[in-house]
Amino acid sequence: MDRNPTRFIKLKNLTKYVGGAQIWSKVVSDANGGAHKIYNATVHCLLAKRSGKKIICGDTGAGYAGKMLSMAAKKFGLKCKIFMGAKDIERQQPNVRAMKKNGAEVIPVYSGSQTLVDAVSECMRFWVANCDTTAMCVGSTVGPAVFVRICGWSTSQISRELKVQLIDEFGSIPKKLKLYNCVGGGSSSFGFWNEFMDYDKKQCEFIGVEAGGPAKSKRHAAPLTYGSKIGILHGAAQYVNQNSDGQIEETESISAGLDYPGISPLHCFLRDTKRARYTAASDEEALKAYKLVTKYEKLKPSLEPSHAFSVAIREAKKMSKNTIVVVNSCGDAYKDKKILRNRLGKKYA
Amino acid sequence: MLNPIDVAFKKAKKENRPALLTYTVAGDSTKNQSLVILNAISKYADILELGVPHNTPVADGSQIQTSAYRAIKNGIKMEDIFWIVKKYKKNKNSKPIILMGYYNMIFQYGEKKFLEKCKKVGVNGLIVVDLPWPENKSFTKKCKKKSIYLIQLLSPTTSKERLNKIIKDSHAMNYFISMLSTTGGKLKVSPKKIMSNYSKIKKINKKKNVVIGFGITEKSIKSLKKADGLVVGSAICKEISVSIQKRQNPVTNVANLVKKLKYKIL
Image (cartoon, rainbow over all chains, first blue to last red):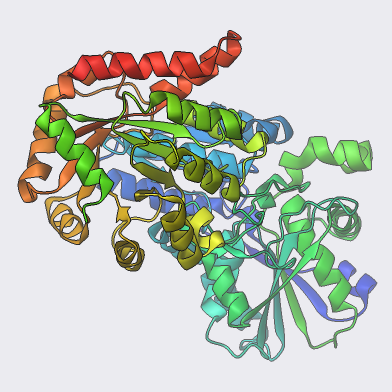
């Protein structure tokens, strides 16, 4: 396993093109397996070993949480079962192949919208029925409180590294620091921000970018941006897309990793206390940002961080040169090959 | 005044048998049909659980999920569910009604408004699957004020210490989940084991009625008849699904099934 921190790099060409703040990226997709999900997966496997469980089950949307859990499970000699919406299996094939290669059983979920929300439900059902032999890894900072804490703490490895890297680069934490991150369940953003929580928001601002869905659709996966009401989903109170009766509404997003109707209670709290600011980018905006980033840099952010890049690029234009914008590039676009080819043509796949 | 739920248990005990509790989903497959089903099974069942369909039913297996999705697809709303209970309670032979569902539906309706409405239409008890003890403490108190039982769920993995605390805070009826499973799972532990776990719970407070549910079918119901009450849910929901598939009348088929269940425990 690579013990080096994931890279913190300046996107010089993109900065020049945008012509405002300095744009940097924390290339978390350098992490073993290609995304931040490895941190949570590793900790869950350690806990499973410690508690004497032989099997670990987990949910996945984009397939990263599942892929990393299958990697970690293999390493620790645990049997691994991954629950994944049938729609997501179809659109994230490279990660599905990786899970199978690691010896995990991928169980398609056909209920409801056949995406992440249903995968989480089905995984919880399996665990409830098998908790005597099986440990459960919830793939993001969602679910009952203990799972939110485990995931939040382990994924904070991102900000633990970034803090050191910022001080190495600038001598101290910059006076104007803006941390952009996509938000689905909210694990990568929480992990990216956690170590900076106690700084004044005038110095370290957090910007969470939710998935706005297709520009022409009313559906989205952006409960904070579009004012969804508080509800209870998967054992936690949170802002969640729902109808007036309390039925959970289906979401729509080009990015499987952000396609979740609720959001971590941690982010609900950060919004209510105004510590973080939330906005959304549409499918089209994310694709446009992907094109820009790949045109100017040797970086291929997956569709999830492309949402964050979209807003970062838009806002960086208006900022001074001494402002440090950092975008968490928390996943690699390899898994999105099929979608990118369909939407942007062969050149971008 | 006794809660009609207590009366139902007393009657069953007098007849030296467990109370039979059924579970059907409100609005399955339509608003009217679910009401007709309740009326048809009243003759045989002692207490009727009515599921409030939710589209993210984390505790439910495939049978009840199918019923819930069918009801939602056919347009069932919270107000319709209260309408069903209200209409049903006009039946002279009506039995106690327990609404069973997920907390978000109650939360969106508003706890206070929900309980007032329950009281008004004649709901006697509530099971809220994803509002466990101790998070349900304040809601439990609110239920008590309206003389509605909040039925606590106990499972084979609930620790002794926790069992004591939950039962102390509980009303006169509790629900023991037979095994580690979602609803409708195959009975994977022996009835003997289930009854031994049941006895441990019963010992904590003999006065409180404990029903057993999850995985109980026509085949297994007899072996558990020493319990205060037994719940059959998924098997009934399955009967509705199969009837629809075969283009048969779900009402008569379900009534026949409940009748058979009743005879097994006499």
